[in-house]
Length: 211
Image (tube, rainbow, N blue to C red; front, side, top):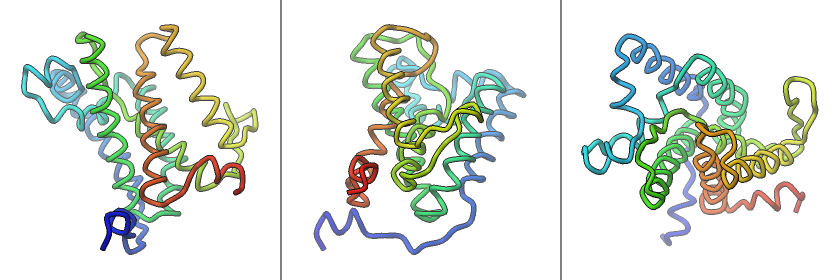
């Protein structure tokens, strides 16, 4: 069996609402942090804590940490809206692999970025890297879907992805909207793009253009 065949070997299709398990895990960690706020520094990702403190789990656990109720609400709505639809199409096992791989690689790449840039005062937290991956996956699997921004403005899903990518890139290079992990969001989009190319042999750009 070639490497290509191994990478594209599908899981047996199952659907058991894994997206709700992801939401439940995030809510559980949020409640635990409310009970013990010191867990924020243990579970969110700080470059010095990872490299010098030996907290190598942080590029994975940061995704479960949220700063406040609006932060977790926004991200979990993203998992609910995009994640359930993506899971229904690709199956629960594939969904979990895609979701956690996207979140973890987003954390690792962000860590490398922070180290190269000499940024050591940041605490990365939140599931938004994975949510941006889900957004691209949704737009690729449902390219004719229309999303109502703010429940009012209808936008084709691929156009929304491109719009968010442009906005995140603009905010990153201009330093606008500080306190938001724009680089992690962009990494999430990039990882999802590569995942679909490698795992499914699907080019999102061709899916969006109907080719």
